[in-house]
Length: 409
Image (cartoon, rainbow, N blue to C red; front, top):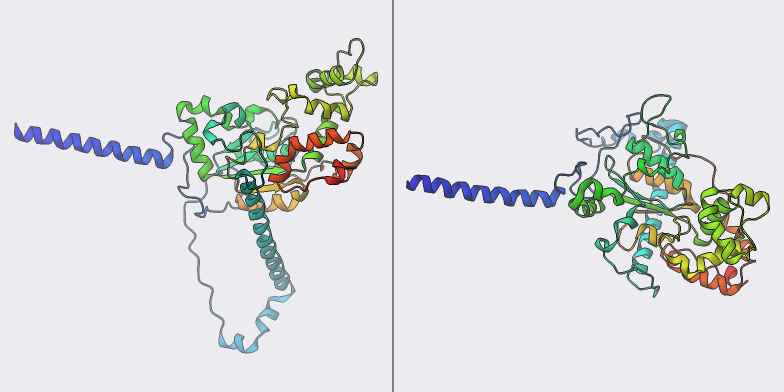
């Protein structure tokens, strides 16, 4: 009997120890994650994908063992430049390219650190810029406000998309990486971002966002979000706030757009356009009759207190700090539309997917910063100042200079 009681005690202690181990392991890997984390710590090197390898294929598990470079022989040391001459013109050209790339990487690293530090300074209150949500914790952000954080578990990437900041092309990149869209011609997932139809990438069903985590993971969703934010590479792209507004207006109200006309344009015309009588039912009819919102009516609409609600302040003109929560999400890379080409190349190298795809070289947005003064010339100075206050957090946080020339012209 004593032996049986001892065995029961030993079994109970063993079970307790196993439960403790499970708890510790749960905290380390995030529980029963459908997309298990492959890197327990940021900074540990991931195997680089091989050019031509299928997107989404698991990286090789074989470690790359670095080999020591052979030391120079005395004969080569005596001849000095003979070794360099032996490499030929092609070798020297490659050396120059590598040197320039290294120099560019160093400058890019410094620029990235400056951009990220500026965000931290504004979020910490050092710049005395106050805005809603600056001090709240990530756990306090409602799920509906996390719908712009796209997650790719295969490559451990989180992208916060900002409309009118190359988001169509970056979404195409994310579609290729996640293999979430099948090409009708090949019957296989797209492998070239430029081949992905731009009108399809804005279909929300293609992208796994943090806002969808509740449906996928239930009560574990916030825990998994925290783990992915800690371990995944997070990035976003930004743009001069006033130029982004001009671009949004031109795109949504400069030509017939039925959805935006019915939901926003007709409201602008009724509220600020002194429209007498009824408005045309469709955008096509309105444009044919010469009835369309002006840029001044658009700005007046943005400044209207009734427009401040989440449902009305559309994503195309919503501030970046409200879309991407940079005070709660510590982004690893902050790109700018103004330096899109170089930033895109650097980012793809950082994500270690530059061997799999290239950033699409599609048509650039033609809205230029030089247009700002002309577009805002029709806006009264009081409205320009109010508009700046509305977007001041984005100006300050992302390092765009205060547009004094526009504000006081």
